[in-house]
Image (cartoon, rainbow over all chains, first blue to last red; front, side, top):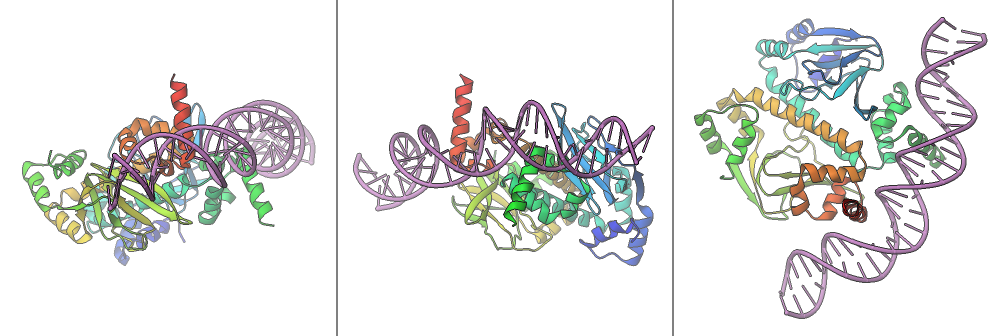
Length: 195
Length: 195
DNA sequence: GCGCTTCATTGACTTTGGTTAATAAAATCA
DNA sequence: TGATTTTATTAACCAAAGTCAATGAAGCGC
């Protein structure tokens, strides 16, 4: 599968695209590659662009007292919608940094307008997609917040096992809201129980 | 302010409505009243409707081992978008229960379609509104996960002090991800420190 | 208003995560 | 490869949340 096609798979969740539409979309979208360690967004910048990960892994985090707090990992097939992305034009508190060499599509509000002018049918579909993301985010909020760190780790293990492979543990710890030492102990506890 | 106008205030965040649009909207929307203790949604039901709270308070929660875990409180001026609301027609794991006598607007996908047919200008606006909610949800996730329960309580105190008045403490505890006993101790710690 | 039920607080004890520091393992790079 | 840096684990100790149980306070129904 060519990386560009990843976005078709995503759209296919919400609607059935005609052959022509699919080809047009692949032609229309802008693809950009980032090296490991590169930033899609830095704190203080106004997020003007939206992304969709075709390949690689992007980590979202912000700083508290100089310490990084990871809030999300975006991997293949996930849209990256930095808060204030299109509507509020505010300085972002988030960083978006590539944990691997990463390929994304890039969308600006202007492109988006052109895109919907060309494919008006997809405007409501896009709303559905965002509603879906909202639902997921709220689901994550509830399952994560109301769980212990150990439950959160198990949850992560169940839902995104790929992350355990490709993301350093101290970033996962930050994401789970614990210190690396604690995550280490949690892992130990779990393997002992598993015996 | 008539309760119906609450929804105009919400929309005004995202766009400026003409007099005529505002009147049409107030005429178009469906309003429904629920008694304290009534359910807008129960686990296992397919959420077909979306709500917007005009007056009162709705608690969202789900069950883990028979125990309620509160994930949100919706009060005046907040949209209630149960996951799967419009797109996925899946059985919900959430309950939506009224903590007070509550007045909401009710929207179905069909009504929504009619609505956007009448006000096509508002379709992209609605998308912005949902993006905004998504951003808030993600922000909430990050600030909550990465805070201690005490910080979370202080946060709640700062952002939604009304909830402390109108919601029983054990529901707040559940919302903060701690046991009622712990919330009690947190409150004690804080008042002692405040001396 | 009285009584009952529900909710909030407190105490003793356990479990778990934070902190600090040392060490081991792994990744990186010259 | 070998040396250096980064990341992961372990230990000892402290603080905070969970658990269990008892007591007070508040809310509600009759």
